[in-house]
Image (cartoon, rainbow, N blue to C red; front, side, top):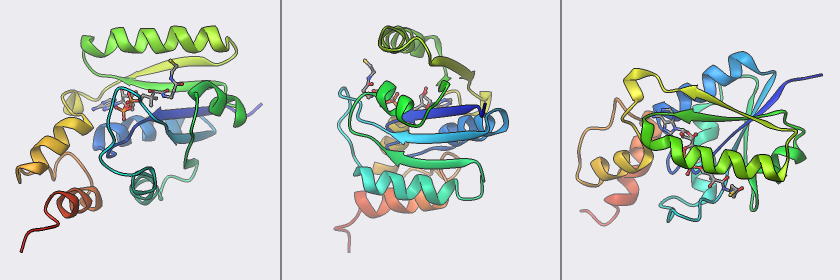
Length: 163
Ligand code: COD
């Protein structure tokens, strides 16, 4: 049986922290589906289509990875692609409570799909999409944090009315 994982997230936008988790998952699973879902606690900055375009571009060289979006529950998406695993990244202790809550909820919804956690690379332990947006908004250097295409997309959106 093929091992299939889902890497779910808001990816608003995708960062090197996300990419690290995706690459490491792709080494372990036969196929990894990246899925852009709605996090009702967050107000999106990029549209779903914009986020997907960036994800597809920056993961295009990883053969066993594909990306799509889903309107609904993560667990329903995971079932629809016959996934046996959900992958989440863990940064600091502050991630733990939220992750425990959604993992437990997902287990109530289906106990056939296990959630696995991958510890962040030390280099990216502070990195989040929110911090990247904040720094880019005020013209800070984010070139170490996101691929160039993401950097350019952020600048274009924040500074579109600049002469
Ligand atoms: N290092 C390592 N991992 C990282 C880093 C980093 N620097 N940055 C982010 N990550 C990990 C996160 O821990 C997470 O695992 C993943 O990357 C995606 O992160 P985000 O922030 O883009 O995505 P989230 O956390 O907003 O995603 C939440 C979901 C959209 C997956 C969730 O809200 C969801 O499942 N929504 C659909 C409705 C549903 O089914 N809800 C759950 C049942 S209650």
